[in-house]
Image (cartoon, rainbow over all chains, first blue to last red; front, side):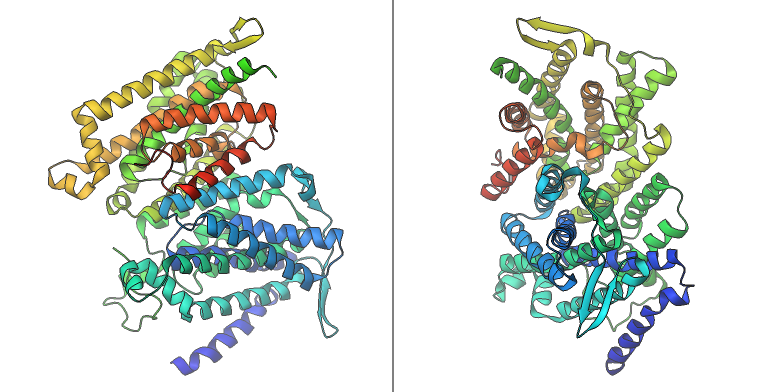
Length: 327
Length: 284
């Protein structure tokens, strides 16, 4: 089984690349696929906190917006290319995450959520009022993404041109998350969440783990924001809107926490609904909010919980990173 | 700047903050439940009162109790749905559930009441009181009086009655309280209904200050966040002090430094305090 996992994953990843063209290749299909990839990457940033630390970060819109703002400002004002703006997005998000991580070092549970939410509110107000960041108008006219390596690459705008980049970013993110799950940090994080006493007895510094996971998660959401800026050719304070926050959380919980593909499938379900089965902006809000609440109220484990109901006794070959839930 | 006027403004703002925050403070103290739909509940209450006035033709003093009653009923429904998670004290999931509810209410209200700003008018909002160059409205007086009465009554109930003792015992240790035959379920429902009704009263008194929008949600009540945490989790007196303190801070910061960054400044203050004292200023 295990020996087949890597080739199977590679084949799936390659197949994913052809999803939009197989699905007809219409502009709306490319738009949906590119958006799914970008927003899923955004959700994976918050997933690291929610699934592995067991905390609810309401501040990941900060990193998402930071990536977008870094990309647009440097591309518009300084003419930086895609690699440079991506590097800047990572650096900016790391700095912000380190500051916020230090501020929240001693907070837990709802206090952690309240503080991260407070930080997002402050960030939005600053972005809205500070002329340096474009104020309420945001930054318009982001040039096409220029991303070349050894003379090859893309120089494009629009969803079809950006799809390869979005796909690559998503695959890299998945690879990163998979590595994180098996890393010392990832397993320590789970231990701190599930059994803090054991973690302490084994010499794991819970605060250091929490801080490192928080800082690690930020560039993921930031790179999603980076690509989002090129996709829309515009960034503004609307990147702080609760839509993105609710979308991240719903994407994570809808299928089930601590599943590698969970946030991707969750994002895909949401975006497909909003693109192809939309019942108007307000109607979509009702759907998204109701799904989020209903999943947690009815199947707290997510849709995967249905699988457990169907299959009893539960499969013995559980992945090592999905131990029993607390409580 | 007229200092006396700013102090009055601060007291007026502060009584509003405290009034909107009180339900949340009690909920957080008793059930450790962070209700992220608080702002949307405020919005719903304002629109229900507005709709009662616009469509049923009732006057302001009937519309506000209707909104309080409606939100109280909604509170029973919501808490009924969340009860299993509340009894498990699954706080992470509960927080996300309330975010979902908030988003649902926002979309639902936009469908129901339309996306335009509406004017929810109190007859007292236009009757001003002037002393020299200081002015305020009778609505401000009503808000202040109601806030003080509600806080006083709540303090008495929580600290001097059997009912208050029940709530405090469930807050302290729900499992132990149940062993002593206390029905924690009823206490949780009661506390949640109080939160919804209190925020509805807050909306009835405070929302007439400006046009109401279905999208206002959290932005309108965002500062109550600061009140709840600064005042100390579950502390009634702390919330009142924090409410007035924050009102004065906002009024003075807005007048002296910059009105645009007032919210950011209040939250920056909160961040500083939380770094120093993670459980809030009023923590024991």
